[in-house]
Amino acid sequence: MKKNRLVNIQIKIIAYVLFVNLFSLKLHSQIGKEYFNKANEQSDSGNYEGAIINLTKCIYLEPSLAEAYYNRGLAKADIKDYEGAILDFDKCILLNPNLIDAFYNRGRSKYFVSDLLGCILDNNIAIMYKPTFALAYINRGLAQALLGNINESCWDFCKAKELNAPHAQEILNYYCK
View 1 (cartoon, rainbow, N blue to C red):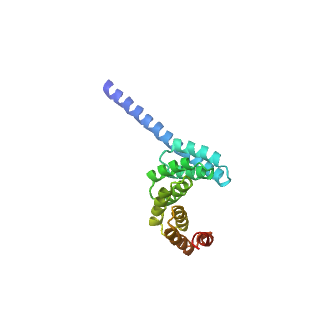
View 2: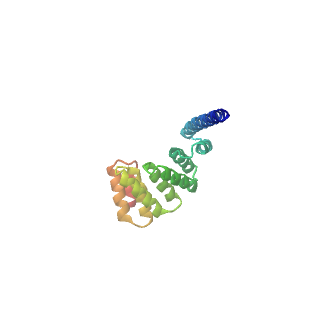
View 3: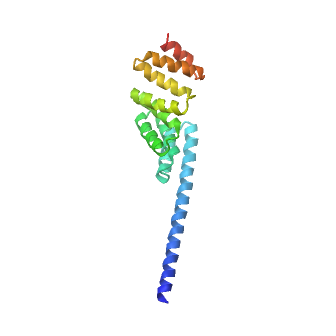
């Protein structure tokens, strides 16, 4: 009789612990989303530092949320912390390799730290998955031009113009006279 009672108490304790853990996970997830949403509002209003702080809090609570790393990478790039942005885009891509814009933005950040080959490779991936990604052609073309690959860069700029990329004609006129 005492053994059955002890088993019943153990089952109740386990059920309670599971309930508390599930509630805690749900609460963490809800709070993480609140930080994520607040960060998006801050980014939209130009408060990139505030967005980075709230996205860091979100990532602490939701470490597998690829979009949080992506948005924090964007905010870091906006304040010209390109090395930090690259790290966040790396993590985002690791968590969700289908987020093609992460490849483009990582490539863009690599351009600004003079990793031109890395820029070209990331934009190749973005273009491979999204052949109409006009800005990826611009970004890749700029890196090609700096490497002295004028024919390749002019091809990219022509493709970007064909896809109606902003400023493609001006860039084409400057590099491909």
